[in-house]
Length: 252
Image 1 (tube, rainbow, N blue to C red):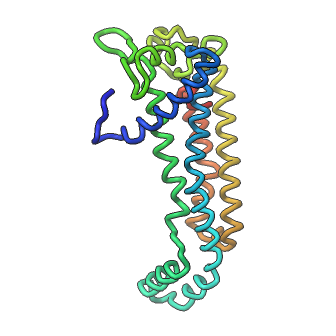
Image 2: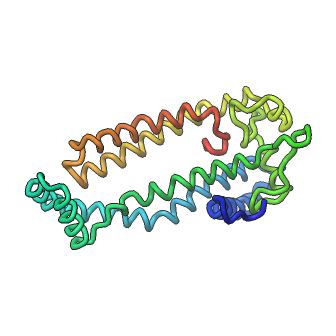
Image 3: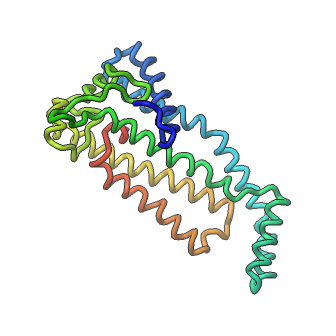
């Protein structure tokens, strides 16, 4: 794959590069073709991305604390200019500027994580065989990974014959090319997607609770209430019902 300046390669290459470094490290210990080495390379890729997001997360916390401090004054402004929306908007912007509050800072980690997940999903899907000229073949490279690595990842299987890049609804001929066993993918995939859904719910629950502590009156806002319900229930359900279409490596 060559770098395309008009695509999301700005995301794909860094993600595959970090994953490549971890695979080299774990491949040295467990062997480059080991399924464990590939699983750990994906898991530690996430750990690395979390570490890189630590500073934006701290900025988010700082912004939330500042927003909490100005809430009483915000309430006064809403009451004072409740009949003048334009003046209210101007005064709120002025107050945020004086207090050093950046409302977008609280959204920054989420805005960064979304394209990261999309990038990881794309990179892992790229390891799957493709149908060309009447036959299934592996790509010659996947960003930082060469042809040998692509075949190694495609052939990496969990006990029972479940390919790491396989998914429960994978076409039969594509799965057969990898000598994969659908029953094994389901056996691994169902518990993984349930655990992923629970983990997503618990993470969202902590986030909602933290926001409620920072801003006591936010829960009464109808828009906030709707967003909280989406985070607590819709997102976890998306993970569970989307599980059959996600490669096992993504679920890990």
